[in-house]
Length: 365
Image 1 (cartoon, rainbow, N blue to C red):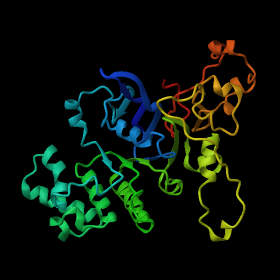
Image 2 (image 1 turned 30 degrees about the vertical axis):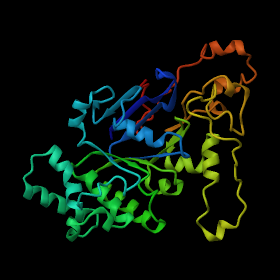
Image 3 (image 1 turned 90 degrees about the vertical axis):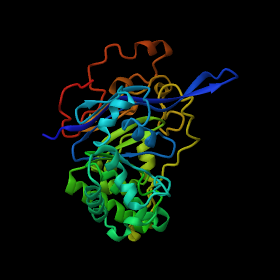
Image 4 (image 1 turned 30 degrees about the horizontal axis):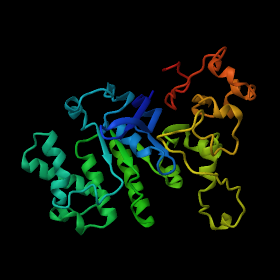
């Protein structure tokens, strides 16, 4: 049975807000606020949501590019959530990242060969000839010409620069790669080429991806499972086909209703577009209860009081919504005095997502 390569439990990344002459902390931006998921070895987990929901911060936090506020991160059997920076160095070859902006992520003063070879200098004891051979192998692996080895980033197109970023991420033979919106800055004609390259490399090298994007159509193409984020929390997690054919959370339904129809024969047909009202609340001051209650078209009284639990409502299909919580659907008119006893008498049920393949396992919390 395929094992989880990445396990994330209750991950939190809060950025402090300081004010005043003495720089006292007066609050915190809750960019990631209690996110949990697993990624199977060889799997692609898509992470989607609108801008500002915390997708990129979540990806960076999983790789420990930040000192996380709380939670647990296990990669390839090793817990790294509280590791100091010195100990993390030995884990860097296992986990790498492809950044969103290929131009900003490459040093303009370094050649292609130096950029791709830098991880080899830092983490291996290869000779110069061995590094040169490895760099040429990586250049060829991502579909670039070996003759480009002495060129600088400004001499390449956006798609070629992203291929350089992918080659650099592959240099140390990682198992896990976070792709942070790797196609967002590229032309539409180039996006498919880069995604196809990522899929080809995954099949050949056995890679595991966390693919972050706001392009739901592309995520449907590349991901095995999809997690939907809203205001720092995962509100739905399901296998790709189940999520796109039968979304359960109102926010997921609204996102999917906005996806353009690619088939010209169907483009003129009327679709049930869900237009959300209002603006996204500030992550520094999220609403009480459910984060989505201020914009939800199906909002209920309980949504303003109680944060919904993340429940498995179908095999492998998780959602955080009172519409699918039987404990709250029957008590929608409960008064404020019931808030403190919201869990009284509740039957035991899993509230932390396990892997799609192991969805029949016991509680992992």
